[in-house]
Image 1 (cartoon, rainbow, N blue to C red):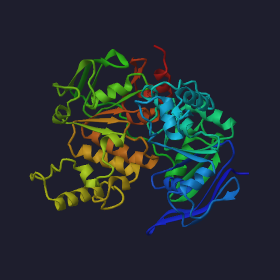
Image 2 (cartoon, rainbow, N blue to C red):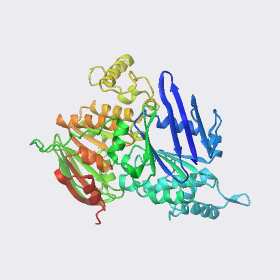
Image 3 (cartoon, rainbow, N blue to C red):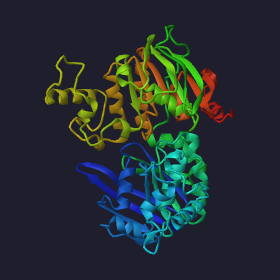
Image 4 (cartoon, rainbow, N blue to C red):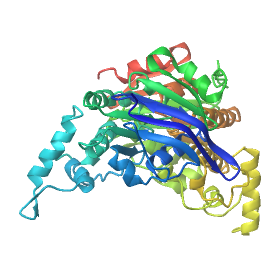
Length: 496
């Protein structure tokens, strides 16, 4: 008997159908992946389950008991359902015990907080997930995978029987996602079931038991993970067989180097690294947490300063950490972390033109009407949805369309160097292909591209050459036939 069933779920927003008769069933002690492109209906289904949105029709049963049609979040909580979202809502400055106690409450003795007992309770929660993390450890010192484990432990009380993991691994390097397997399996042995919402297809293999794919508000398929492969899942999501990437070039045009990085080091990257990038080249950077990959990508994006080293663009020295120098040199940046690079509550046009200076006009601080019309034309040319969204809040757009907007903002700067840091995090397969087309078009026009990504498949498909970092040093430089996701995995895990 299913522990959770959603039957014939329907939901419309105005004239658009978000869900059209979706069925979903979760079995006891199961990890069930929920996949689909932007607008497929995943978020709507989860919001309805949580009691945040109301379905137009449909039945939700938990433990065989139907929820009221107008159920509230409290009803779902009482039924043993918990949620962990992409924003883990953890405080880096506080310990694991303090972060968990803020949610569950501190143990008390004679009216005062009993810190020792609180830590004991937290230790028991972590042990239920086979985690040996010390409750006194500051969350800021944890890896991203460990932070996810803490966030799950926080909601794993005695009554919790269903936990919804909503894009919790969107910013997690691919190999790090595998570290969650032990924690989830340990919770499963105690009867906990998981709904695992993700855009990252590769990680469901080995983590999940079943997968359901939604598209256009309908259930496309449900199957056991061990009975399918990645290409089948992609075909379900995009509605056709996967196309072959056209990014690879057999040779690059002869040209002087556009970017020169000389002997940079600092933080986790304790061995100096030097490299260059030519116009029209897509250079990939990848590695695991702690490899130095993240620090290097932040330096190249102008968002941090290394301990030593130099950066030259067209043979002109650029000061690390000085955004004005980077922009003057024709360097534009796209981050996958939209919370750090966009303003969710501002209008789309305000995010597109944050300083309200349009390169297409000689007028400084143009009228709002001019800005609105210019933005809508640009968005329309690039198929950003919904149409004419310049005056909509950015948060109203899907993740893929938000990311496309950030690409367009960077391209409006007429870059000579484009630095991308995990640019497709949280973006579905179809949306990724559109972003890749924009990326390839820039390279074809002579822009030097640095693609810093923790997604090995993405790097394999899109980069001409890849630098693999590991153990604080450059482990390998791969290109041509040597550049495969499997080889990237091996090099990233190679011991120092």
